Image (cartoon, rainbow, N blue to C red; front, side, top):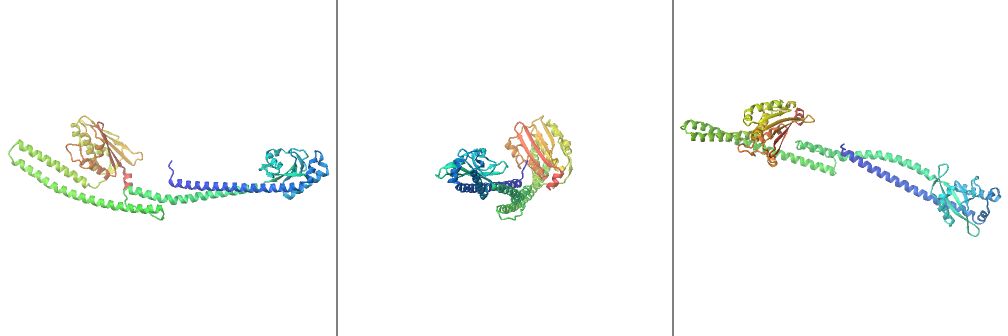
Length: 489
């Protein structure tokens, strides 16, 4: 499937914009998350250190003596109330004290007895060990039982001698993640809007680039079809606009050059036709005088032979002049619906004696299946007469000439091939077959195939010659049907 340049350009621009939006959104989200995470970690560590400082000293020494079952003692109750007060002041979820074996000593929550194991602390051992060395530390975010995100911070608690006797742990909900979730939703919405904007913008930009190029392409096709001088509208002053201006200048120059060549060609045709007429008049006079001379001289076989030779040369020269006139000044087309099968049949009837003399067999294939075309029947008869005669002359004796018709798949044109089983030509000779005055025959003007090509092109058709020495020659004609001719006109 062919993808248009405009689609490719639009997709490329849209993809680039989407990639930039996605990358920038991810970087912004990641940067914000890291910054908020670091800020929360620092705040939790400060809260843990501040609260631990209130438990240092005598309270730290009291923590040493707590044993399982002391939950109903006044000391435990006072320490738990102190933790609850610090928890509320710090606006955290929970605050608790663990011993150096990671077991509970005091917890702000009422349902955690002394000596309880905190299974969730297993992943935080590295941070707790930092606190055991006297350094406050914060954990990474984790899922709580309520599916919310939390973080913990740890700070050492010291006794009166400054020794570390326990660790204060602080749990807080990670509220900024909820903000980030909302931010991510907003970023997705912005991304969708940006994507739509990118698509619209890319289509607009693609059109601004591709449409002028398409105009140039269409104008190029028009020039290719012969509409020299075709101009392209220029609105921009960028590189594409400069290209369009250069194209217009080139198109104008081609038109002027074509008009100049056409004028010179017409002048040359008129000059050639005039010279041919000037040559033909003396030739007609020479033939008349030869007839008079033949009647006036005595009967002499040698003289009659000389007169016959001169008359033959005059006829050959007269034929050359006639063909040159046909080549230099072709007659206008007199078009009508033409059946090629009838044209070829009339040509073969005309050449029947010559073909029989050379024992040449002619095969017609699929000509009756060809549709009628709008053409000049007389000119097509001239074309096929010349092609069949050339094919027959290329055969030594007893060969075959095949004339086969084809219809193009789109039914806009027909093709006809004239093939022979003659001696063939070299590829170099085949390339020069349509050059005026080029011939490989001992006799001939070298204008026959040149006139054939001119007449075929006059019908807006094409003709090609392919040949190989020893394998014969093929002339392939392509002629438009009525619809094709009307469209080209």
